[in-house]
Image (cartoon, rainbow over all chains, first blue to last red; front, side, top):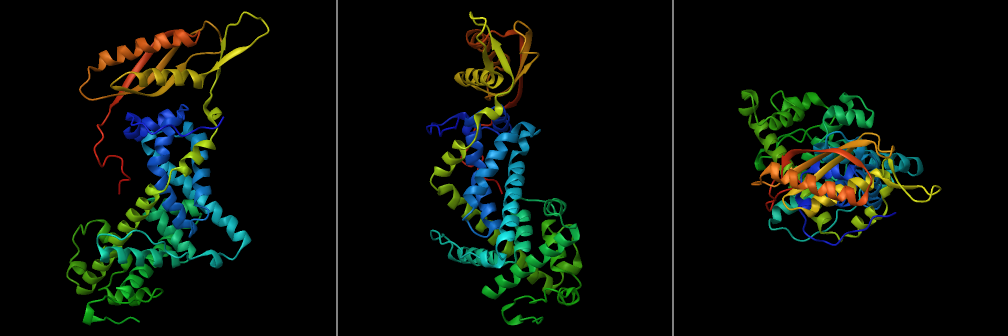
Length: 191
Length: 215
């Protein structure tokens, strides 16, 4: 039996704490789950798009992540941690995608999407720095971008990144240092 | 590549692979160390960093990178938030409500060959909705404690709830308990020995910025 989108009526659930929503969703409450989807879906989409280097597969990855989340919510012990738990799921799904993709094509061919255009920003300079960063991030080698994104968007520790990517912590440290230097240098060049 | 360009105060364009040259350009430090220093809010103060013009320029670069990082995330989040809702519908259409059905609870039927059950998930749904119909309280996790598969076996129900501020908590909890007894009596044959309500939290009134993606 599929769920449906309810009518948009303001409800205390919309602003309820994560733990309440996670608990209710674990009990099978679709409405509470929908609030979580709306609350953290955008961040998960940003994350997946960054890691995958394009948004072609973002819909699929985020959808799969939420399906997994729905099935496994009962195992989440602390509902307050639902945000980082969701980020962990989307991160695994994104990395799985990359692995599958790597088996099929040369990763360089699918790298480096063109940064997307958006509405003008109040601060032109901030906007241009932002655009520059988006471009440089997209052009980073895949392993560096993955570490950087786990660190900056999923807020993983070095140890968590190492565990997630099955790499020694020293390697993760090196990749992050390199990514940071490249970003710094490129942004200086651009300035 | 590793020369200072003092004219416009840019910092060392360091060699990505050569830590020695990086340290030479940053008063013995690395970009990674400076980044950690920035993460720590410049504490404890390190004069070899604070008093170095090269480090200062590098720190400014790191701060600029951090600001750009933040505004990029904000921009992307805003774009995702403004997308049309179809992806939410698509997520919800693809999940299976049966995942949370739980145990089966038998219901009596006049025909000896018929087997009627209500799922534990459905009972939890009844309990939640009962709470949602009341003002000033939100029902969280509901647990049916006991062997629900044996008709007539007394069970207890444990309910987690959030109460809105300014309410008389015992009174609101009692109101919820009574409403739940009524609902259970109407829709199930469960013998409920007790409904334990734990008010674990107060509902925090939403303000404009509440529950935006924090960062």
